[in-house]
Image (cartoon, rainbow, N blue to C red; front, side, top):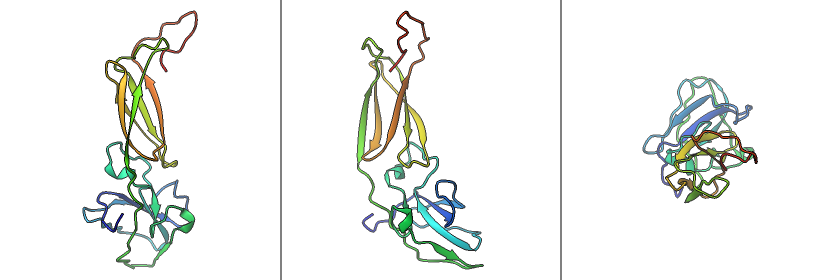
Length: 178
């Protein structure tokens, strides 16, 4: 973004005929100057992917960059394939990364069916932004059932909540948590 290097972002090399949602032939993270290098690459046609991480981590600061393809497009159909010959080295490829999405905060309140807070609830978060990859993690709620999720604009999350309170059947058969 803005011509600045992106450190530690995931770069993948995918067979141009393969589904980028399936797998990457090679995966590397950029160094502090935004450089990356693949070694032992068999000859063939490839797409270079950026941030198509199948198992992103919640605390990874690069996850707010949208997935992209070389030379800097979001749509796979606009991606430019590269061809690698036997023993060939490709240098000076510049991959433009779309702008980082602005941060956002999601405030969650977990309550029982009567409206009382679920103290220390476990709030499950599944990030389905990239579609092909989903990341799940949990955030603890406080004594008032409040939890804060650090996110970014445009992120797609599935949020669930649970409690360690034992289920007690009732005549109304109401849910234990919501």
